[in-house]
Length: 330
Ligand SMILES: [Cu+2]
Image (cartoon, rainbow, N blue to C red; front, side, top):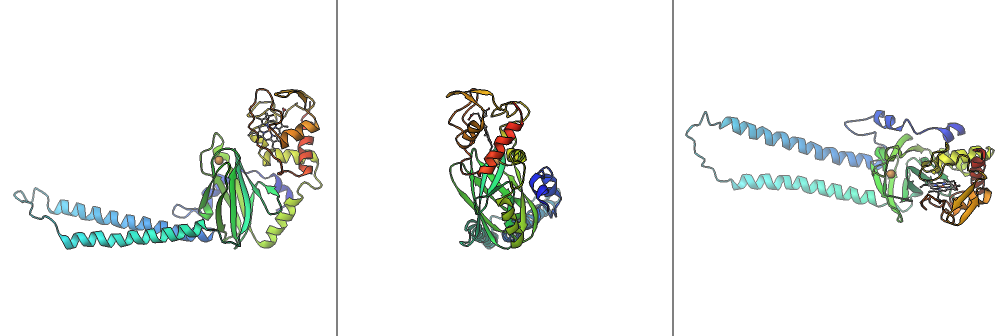
């Protein structure tokens, strides 16, 4: 895949992809070591349910028909109970339930205990975007993981509760503000999968999708190399334009002049902005401060809800945002 498609592809086709790809009985494809275990217990429980539903209703209807009142007008009820029968139908299903519990509990412990040598990626949920930070500190809006290797995701949120869900891996975990949660998996198939937010988090919750790429070690190294200097050789305006979307600024800052949760970026360059610290001119220093310390001067009419991006951007990325806002005119 070329760098430009990697950089500028849109996530719009994800839901159809989830729907199309190898749907079995009611599941997406199995692409992790957990998936097969998860599905086999699920199908076992479903099949036991189907078996007993048919058995119990079958016997019930047969008895109703066999002893119907029209055939036995003078019958009297004589049976009280049958101890051996009742013991059998209590104890035998008891074993089946104990088996379900045992397998479920064992798998649950496995799913919740990441192997100590796993590869760690940090996941941040924010309205309405996932971002992934790789070893080396590089951030990207797609999840790339090596195949056949345990991966641990360290998950958090900058605003409200979200939940990170990869259906093909049969795994999900809450993203909680101010706290880290963990999830692990070992992908077994290379290819592209989908991740979504599965905890209602506001109006654009259903757009909170991310692409998941499972790749070979060599491909993964190439990916890390690529994102470590993705902005190299690019026009700073394009760098800022991409970050506006990929770093989540677009959720609050429009480019067309409409005010959202934050002021639009259109035409603010050079403007006198009224803030709680008095009038400020929108210039290089003001934009930089807005990104690194959003609470330092809060624009009148808006709330102090912008997350800080301190430590998340490298210098050329901040320069890119400045250049992009500048390019939107004054
Ligand atoms: Cu969400």
